Image (cartoon, rainbow, N blue to C red; front, top):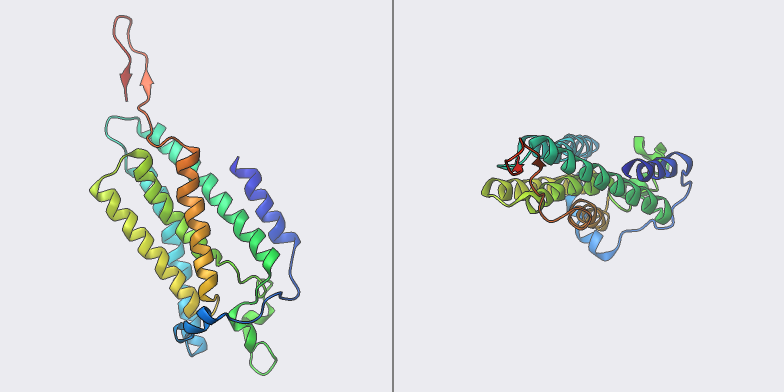
Length: 229
């Protein structure tokens, strides 16, 4: 199910390239976050690279949790398969929502105001210049964090699991803040990305999959009852 959803996202991304923006200015809330923007090109580049690196950690977190955090008394392989299947569907849904929203709304990124020819801005020639809303980095990071939290609800809560959930959400928030600092997104773009990530990474898996993963039953020798693994 994840494959066709992801295919739609890739098709929209590759076939539709906005050549102008529908929205080019910051709203009043976005303007309040202007001090977050790095005041040098080197600072913005560092913030962008840091957000890329932390995003990789956020994406790896639910995968590592699904593989290594086995539920006592249950089949590790069965639990891992079901969780990873749900994770793939969540990430595919998030990618589709982000891509379609970016292409439909066509909001210029914050650096667009410097693309008047007086300043050499490398990103001005990027095909994503008019794809500011929502923040894809933030959406992906919050999808990963929300999946870590959803795993605890699906598999059973624990003190370590709660800590992983909180840490993942904090990491995703840092990714969003860095996207603002890098002048890649407005505050509203980041908030929109966080909402998409939460809906894709927590709400959907909890709705699509059972609230708790049942033990896997395997038949044993005749005369014995089934055992849970």
